[in-house]
Structures are given as C-alpha cells and as structure tokens.
Image (cartoon, rainbow, N blue to C red):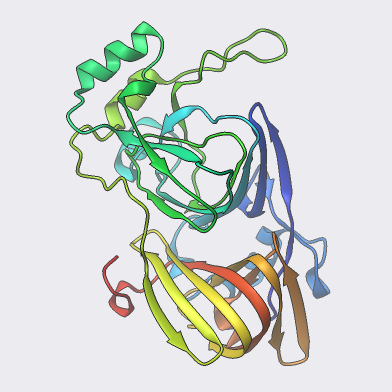
Amino acid sequence: MYPLKFKPITKKMLWGYEHWLVSLRPTEMSIVSNGKFANQSFYEVVSLDSQKYLGTELCKGETFPLLIKIIDARDKLSVQVHPTDAYAKQNETEQYGKNEIWYVLDAPKNAELMIGIKDGVSKEEFSQAVKDGDPSELINKLKVEKGSVINIPAGLLHSISENIKILEVQQNCDITYRVFDFNRVDANGNARTLHIDKALDVIDFSGQIKKQLSCGVEVSSENLIRIVHAANVYFALVEYRLSGEIVEVQSPERFSTFVCVSGTCKFICEDTVTEISAGESVFIPAAIGAYKIFGEATLMKSFVPNLAEFPEI
C-alpha cells in the first residue's frame, strides 16, 4: 500500500479546460500512474480492499465521496448553481448534490468572481432579469487573487471569470444547473442548454449562505503551517505550507488526498518514494499508517473529516 498518483483527465470545454485529478466515476475514471498498480483504474485498486483504501468509515458509502479538479477558465463559465443532496435525490439520478470549495491558483489583477445573489433580490426579480436576457447586475461580485479560498455550498449561484485558474474540491457529483451563459453559442451556432426552472428552485434567495472569502484557521508547528479553510460533513480543505520534513499518521477511518499547488515534495512510506510538483496529486490510502512528507511546497489536503476534530469554520 502506497500513495497513488493518477494520470489527469483533461476535458476541453467551451470556456477552457478541466483537469480531473482524482475521480472515481464510471465515465471519468482516474488511472494510476505509479508503482505496482500503474495503468490500473482507481476502481480496480479500491476494489481490492475498500476498507483499507477508503477507510473503515467511508467504505460504507455507495460512492466515492470526492471529486478533485483544476478549472482553467480561458473564458467565463456560465452563471450556475448546484443542488443539495435532497434535491438531487428527488429530481436527478445521482445520489448526491454538489457542495464545493475553490482555491484560486492564478488570477489576473483585479479579478472578480460572481458569487451569490445580491442582498434583497427576490426570486421573482431575478427570474424576470433572466427572461429579459441578462441577470448579471443582480449578482454579487467578489474580488479574488492567487491564494483566495471560497466555499461554494449547494444553492449559491456562481461563475468563474476569464483567465482564472482554480483548484476545486467537491462532492462526487456532476450536476450543474446553468441559468445564464452570456448568450454564447458553439462552433455550430448552438446555445448550451439552460436549466432555469431547476436553478430557480435551488438558488439561495434568503441571503443565509455566506458570500465571502475564507480566512481559515492557522496552526503552526515545526516545518509546517496548516490553515484549515473548511471542515463540514462533505469535505475538509487544509492548506499545508511545508518547509522541510513532517510525519503524518493516517487515520484508518478515512483516506486523504493532497494536491501540490506550488513547489515540489516527496511522500515517503517505508521503501516507497512518491514525488509530486505543482498540478499533481496523490491519494493516501486509509490503512497506510505513518508516512513522511519532505520538501518546499504548498499542498492542499482534502478528505471527509471527523468534525469533532476541527474548529467551526
């Protein structure tokens, strides 16, 4: 048992590219790129012993809980929203909805994201603006820069602006309701499908969902600064600013993943050394035990947490 690296799955989109780093989905399946399981699918490896790979707690679920991507937006993404678990189960074929979190890998000067409906805007007012052709003025804008972190719960309307690159950690769900696509058409002159009725069903018009950057909770130790950006029932996201060597002990209850966003580091487990650099990821099996991480790097660790171990974010 050792840290698994995967071959990225690159998907060309109307607006740019998605690079799926860790995926266990039938039509977008990660393939191992290192060690004795090289060229085997993530599913094949996990199936050898789901308890040892996913964890004693997480192997009980029917699907792998996370999906990790890099979004390279050359143009604006559609204005969109994702459903809750309850709405997805009732209206879609997927078991889960989609909560996600973004870490901004790169952004131009004065970059902005569309995040949430402006306070006081009603469902009826927004619906009319959509019918009139452009609801942009009713959507909240949020300035971001490299290193910004934004939590995007289900129900929070959002869009990524051009020339922004984002690491996205999300529930393992690919349901997106597009409400506005800036009147774009593809090479054949066709507009993409919109999902206005479903979007209006799930958009948060109450203003209860936060529309702000994550400040995180910082904990420093020798050779490492940890910043907890999110810890909820769906995922945790913890930034590791590594300078030297640390020892991690994996809980047998749950797996972890790391994405390197800058620098280079090595994961050392017994006689196995796995190196990653910016844009690469590793999957840490639940039963791997103790391992070392060595290098000068910024890493984003994601997993499904035991919430009793984390401060409220």
